[in-house]
Length: 232
Image (cartoon, rainbow, N blue to C red; front, side, top):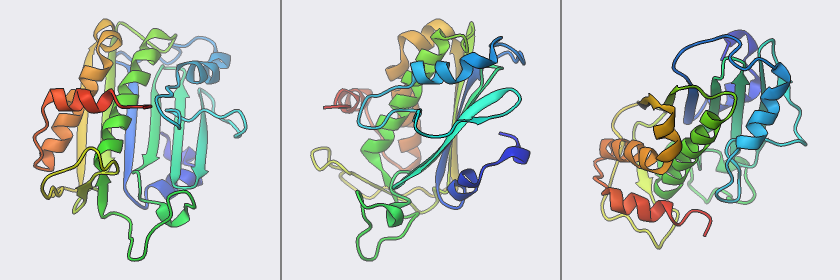
């Protein structure tokens, strides 16, 4: 995302923990999507709704930002703060605040006394969101933004000192798991058919690698069971 066009919402996101997601064809072609007018509709059609909030959040009631070769939106609602763009090259970029880091501006999930940003990392919510990322990537791969080979990159910033917590009491954590590095970065790259056929398995693989950095070794069967609960 060009520094020359950074929106104020993105500057806000970067003041606390955030997730940066990039999904794109592995080979760059500036006008991979020939028609600029298709960009918004591609995101609207491929957006994933597995729970109450879609991924990415595409909202006809929110103004759409437009650049020379991209369209996007900026969302700042309650504790959900997000910026996304889709480029004609087929590259999708999203910045999103880490869940729970903006409870001080939320009425729905209000901060309790003593709360402070940057302390916690929601265990189940993270599994759900990584699953949404790969489900969306699979849909995007089937759209005019897709190509024979795709790349999905996830970066997390502002992690050092965060402790894993469960937002769902029916899926308890046993133990203390704290991240000891400032950031985490994972990349998947492979053929389009694999991404389309196996988004949940690829998401589980990425989640396992992330949680291993907290010192938590999760079995694939455990992750698959949690993924099955999305939307229930």
